[in-house]
Image (cartoon, rainbow, N blue to C red):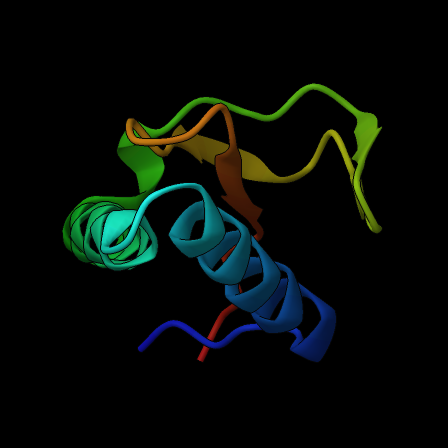
Length: 84
């Protein structure tokens, strides 16, 4: 299972709303792509590269995070693997 930090979830929701303002349905396309990438991450989390340390929007991404591109936007999903 993938869990989101509340600020990350809010950022996805803001992006969805922004894309919908640009063109009706584009926000849905973004959410569909995020869900597709999340499914890939759940299947093979170690197949994604380490993120470069940076500050994007409201989130600091550490170099211990992995990242995956979201093809319908210039964004990336970044996170850390946590042990269960």
